[in-house]
Amino acid sequence: MMTKPLSTSSFRARSCPLLLVSALFFTAAAPVRAEVPPPPAESLSPATPVSGTLFICGGGKIPDEALAHFVELAGGTRAHIVIVTTASETADTAEVDTRLEFWKRQRPAEVTIYHTRDRHLADDPRFVAPLESATGVWFIGGHQQRLTDAYLGTRTEKAIKGVLKRGGIVGGTSAGAAIMSQLMIVGGNKPPELGLGFGFLPGTLVDQHFIKRNRQDRLLHALAEYPKLVGIGIDENTVLLVHGRKFSVKGESRVVVYLPPVGDKPAITRTLVEGMEADLLALHRAAHARLHPRYRFDDKKSNPEISKGTLVIAGGGEVHDEAAEKFIEASGGADAPIVVVTTANGERPAADSRAIAWLEEAGAKDLHFVHPRTRAEADDPALIALLQNAGGVWFTGGRQWRLVDAFEGSVAEKEFHAVLKRGGAVGGNGGGASMLADYLVRGNPLSNKDISAPGYEDGFGFLKGIAVDPFFTQRNRYADMARLKREHPHLIGLGID
Image (cartoon, rainbow, N blue to C red):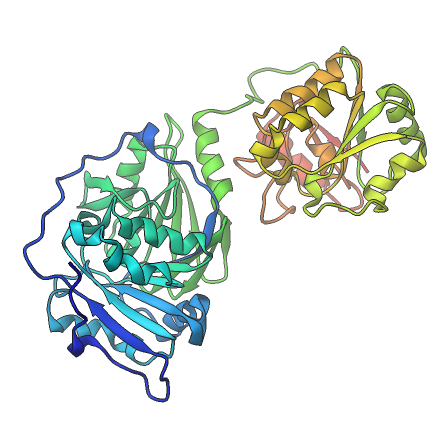
């Protein structure tokens, strides 16, 4: 049963009649969850964009301005915030109030102090009710296993994930950071004790108090057993913000990101400080690519050859009239069905956009514009039917990573190759041209200034052993291509204006 709120833990903010804080406690002896062994690596979920926002603090003193930003992201004066105190050993006593001073000074619409050690109560819909309307959830520090013992696999966990799905914010510090990943460091050093976390940030392994307590070795030790995960070490007084697929950092210290060691390849380390960003999916893809490279560019020299069909590769800007005519002719003529893939553009371009209007001006009469953004959309039977009937496929310009995310390993990708094999035409412009090659340049989701982006180095592979860099002289990309050649001497680099 649900207990009544404790009046000693209820408080109101001055001049804010909407603020009501209630404490939900259950202090009787509670059933303890049986110890759960570390999950097998193959059972862990891959990285996916986060719905809502994660606000992950590495411990220590959190600046009030950082917590104020959490309140703002939760909705400011309209926020409904749930504070989970269960990690603290003082959660069952009045001493926990000392951990709540900041929240007493805020002016959200409602704050609820949420705590039990009873898994049956954590699964009670009446107890979980405050989470159903919450816009933000905050986990205070303590010991992370107290949180998973009480809430893992219960309605409480599901309701907190529901906050994220509604676009809300979930944050925590210290133990409240450790629970963010699906694989959780419970404690210990070398070897660390591992268990199951809540998995709010899939595809990662999060550690906290990272530099202050010299925890680099324990994170690397764990990653050696789970090489598909991205290691994230967050130091004290530092916040990692995750929204969608983007990481950003606030605070006075650092966040250290690791790609695990694989075979004779050492771990790759990247340090992020305030103002710096990283891409979750790119990091996860880079870790996976170290384990399972799709192409081995340097195994041997390749002999680029197109035995059937025609490739038309444009370097960006306007597509030359002669190239347009050649593409349409190779696709089967003006009446041939041509599929135009606009995914790289980001937003679906207007029908009169120069990115696509040139095809109609060049005489193409049967154009089909498609804009898949996900693997599921790339496998859609209607799209596959279009491609199976197509005489040509054209990829518009834009960002290459969007094409990788949508099409890599898809049924549609196989059909692109089938168009060429049956004598049709495949072409692309700008970013779409880069994708036609074996090695993909400028795949970094955060910037097109980097010629290499681990995790986004695989193109569609129509031209084996080739890398295509568009806008070549216009953007002065000679030095970039020279550097790529030094790294991969067997690649043939094509710079196209």
